Amino acid sequence: MAMSRSRKTLLIITSIVVALILVVLIGLAILVAAVRGSAPSVASNSVLSLRVAGTLPDYVPNDPFRKFLGGPDQSLSTLILQFKKAKVDERIKMIVLDVNMSAVGWGKAEEIRDAIADFRSSGKPVYAYLELGMNKEYYIASACDKIYVAPPGELFINGLAADVMFFRGSLDKLGIYPDMYQIGKYKSAGDMFTQKQMTDAHREYINSLLDDLFNRYVEAIAKARGKSVEEVHALIDNSPYSAAKAKEAGLIDNVAYRDELEKELKTKLGYKETDPLKIVRGSTYSEIEPESLGLNKGEKIAVIYATGDIGSGQSDNSPSGSQSIGSDTLAKALNDARDDKTIKAIVIRVDSPGGSGLASDIIWHAVVSAKEKKPVVISMGDVAASGGYYIAAGASKIVAQPSTITGSIGVVAGKPVLRGFYDWLGISNEYVLRGKNAGMFRETEKFSPDERAKFEEWIKTTYYEDFVPKVAKGRNKDAAYIDSIAQGRVWTGSQGKERGLVDEFGGLDRAVELAKELANIPKDKGVRRVILPVPRTFLQELMAAGDETRSGGTQAKQQQAVLAALPEDARRALRYAALLDRMKNGESMLLMPFDLRVK
Image (cartoon, rainbow, N blue to C red; front, side, top):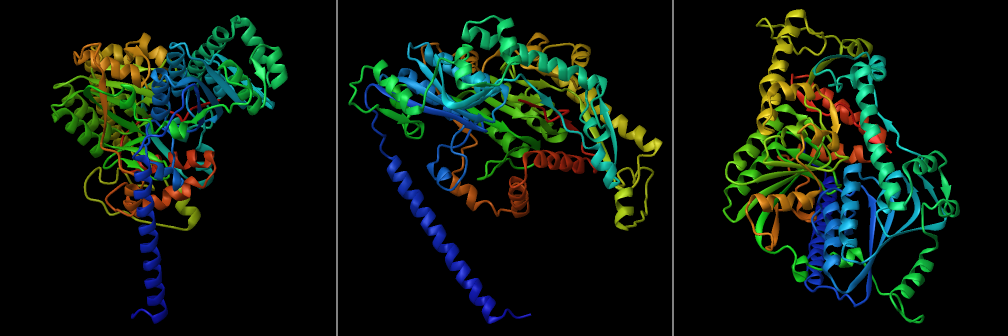
């Protein structure tokens, strides 16, 4: 059918508009790059103003254009670097840290606290300013010299609460039966689909995790505020607090509006009353190159970020901020770093609950191959469990925070049986099969006894011949011992270190230092971090949004846009529904047994 004249006209106009928009965007990008060409001026006796807010992904390219178009503009690595630069920058005399409803996990919160402590070792102070503080915000703020809260502000340090979602009730209503198989007493990923509440084993290690996190939280506050553990327990039990009550209780140092705080800072830094306070915003200070302060110089160490669910193909780092780990992308980055003779060591930052068993194994192989030529050190973020631990197990050393969630060495697989759902919709189907097990993954039938026996045999092979032996070899442990502490159980980094799953405590900085030591780079020499794969700019990501070869192409991007508009709990539910759907063809999942939220 020929296209109508009006449709042709509309198509032409649309094409022209899109072209004009692209020209404008490219022009703006060139302008931004030109502006960035010269470093901003920082006056002496300045105060650096930083903020902790939002999700703080591990890494976002330093690309102002990303912020201009609404993408995430700050990352954990950027924030930590700001502290490192300010520590050696004589023009910066102190930091004011605005802590506002952060969505970071407990591992990242500890990493921020470490960065604060490292900065304070220079003799320069850090003041925290909050308008509303929950558990995690206060935990971060407590690492600072002083804590200020706005007069109408409040502290909700009510203690920690963990919640886990179960979908069996929803599946029952839809007529979907989860025919699952899992290996490991504690591998309860299938429980999300097969149960409506925690099993005894599930409840056991959730309580163990929460006890460990809560005890560390209480001890950190007690040490920071000069109180006993018993006093902090009592303060938590009597929460929440208004700003004034929080000061009376000794939880904070002062109640003040932001301008009142700035007046106090002027006095502390010796300003005249009429002088304006010299404040450098974090967005401006990020343009100060670390090399200008003597940082990030020396031998090269590759830093590879592995964030999100693990799957086959290309990684995703979309303009909207969603991230995933693609086995092709990560394996290529590892191979490139391995073969580059100018790179002396490799650090992989893992923040992942796992995913595809096949993809995890491909990445594990690339890690082991790289380790044959140079040191490979793992830095664990908030979560490095199941497939996330699988890809870490073959490294030279593993560094994690005490509150990192790790372990979960186990396998879960199965399929959703849709017979009841199809009956409800009035759909019928028939299978014509050739081969005894050709119908193993029929989506309308449960596994037959013979099929289940075959299926279980295959999953046991994945666990007993792949996962456990590879972890045992990587950790220099007996396979029977690894099996005894595996069983799908999730551990904190502290518990993992006690059991030999983790080597040292620390964040990415400690992992880089350890890689430097293993590469025999002298202590008095610096190192330069090289990010692999080479980060794509925001514009490049936008231009690639329609590329069908990346992350599922246009359809995947459209799905991500829809998901981004949904409430958080709905996004969590749909994420696990998608994982269940991936299992229907027999894909084994090395997946953390729950999407744990501790608030």
